[in-house]
Image (cartoon, rainbow, N blue to C red; front, side, top):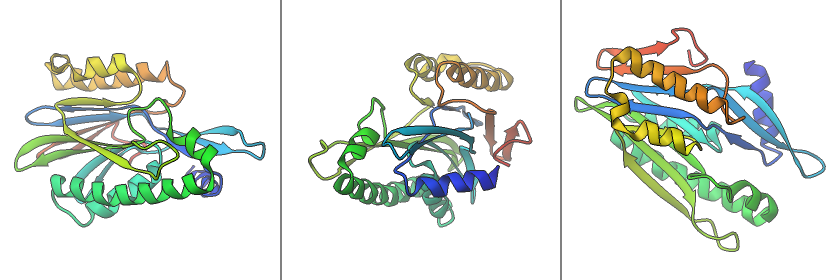
Length: 244
């Protein structure tokens, strides 16, 4: 599977393809952070006729690097993962890692999209001006100074296609947040009363909401993985999953 995914990633570098990952749910309690994600990777390969062919594969969306945890959502996810890993390997705290990631990924995204805008305007319009909250998004989560934290960082394009790329950053802290397209699920997740429950039920609710999203979006699917982060370490559910 990894070799097949590698080939897909190599092909996409030459075909203006998109990566879309669309269902991650994160919940913060005083003593733990719970984060779940589906595992579907949707790759849109541009064919010789100028249209898009869709290829599905699996990818881990939850990561823990050097004690810093993150989840990637939406376009250019492999690039986001690579940037976040580099950042986490140079940092030991969540907030500085978030700040450094914002700086590095904004520079990368601006350069990459501006090159696309200048060389292929039609593809640029199709790939970037969609009905999505963010072009790319990342969550950083875990403990800092003994407290649980969830940071959401969204990157969106503000200028019209005829002007140079300008990236807007939306960085916020949440008690609970979902990254995806379903507004109904977002309302359920961000209602903090949803999570006034036992750990077992919190984990079940995260799983069931992601599963529900998979029934209405072709870009969500595959095995569901959940991380439970506590001061004494990380528990993966299931223990053997696509991320480990």
